[in-house]
Structures are given as structure tokens and as C-alpha cells.
Image (cartoon, rainbow, N blue to C red; front, top):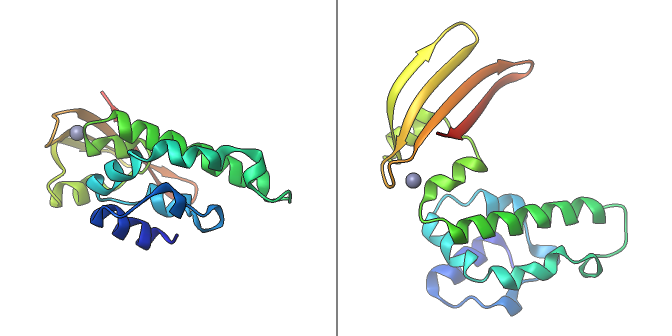
Length: 150
Ligand SMILES: [Zn+2]
């Protein structure tokens, strides 16, 4: 099922694991779902996704090793969502700009300092009060953002 259909089914409560078709699973899109309630909903079915990590699920071709790596990542992600009470767990997997997160009300920026190469922030999650150290560093081809829980 396409990621958009997966989201619809989770929201409507009509999802079941027989709808998981390996070739249609896009781990990248699932990892980028920003709606935490949807992710929580998907993580309840986590055990139904585990077969995607099995070698025999996938055709034996040059892509298989890569896909298996992606599926490991997806299942690990769903496990940590399942175990977490707060959406800020997503900062382990994606690194948005702190300003964007503050605008949407997810965090509050407590402190910001910058020099010519590095900008550092101290942010607090508005839902669970976890504090994050965010570093934006100039790298060879642009900027690298990292969120680290304190
Ligand atoms: Zn949080």
C-alpha cells in the first residue's frame, strides 16, 4: 500500500497487516511522516512489519541487501516510536531547523549562539520538557543539523 493509503487506513482504524505489500512499502516516506499520532498508530502493528526484514521476503537481486538495510531501519524506528511517549523522538531520525519547530509550537528555543561556522541552540520540547542541543554546522556541501538530547 502507498504511504498515503497507509496513513488514511491508520486514521480511519481500517488498517490490518495483510495490507502490507513489501514492494509498496516506502521506508523513507514512513520515516518522514510528521503526524506523531499516525506514527503511534502504525507502531501498534510493528510486529506485522517484521517479516520485511527477512531475506526471503525479497527477490534475490542486487538491490536486496540495500532494501534489507532500509527495512531494519524502518522496524527499529517503529520500535522506538512504540516505546516513546513523545514526538520529539523524531529528532533522532530527522533534523529540522529549530526555527521551523518553534513556529509549529513543538519546541521553544531557550538559547542561540553563533559564530562564523557553527550555530548552536538549546531547545526544549513543549510536550515533555526534554532539552535538546542543536548544532548547525557548515560542511563541504551546505549545512548539517544535529539534534542531541541532553
Ligand atoms: Zn518531547
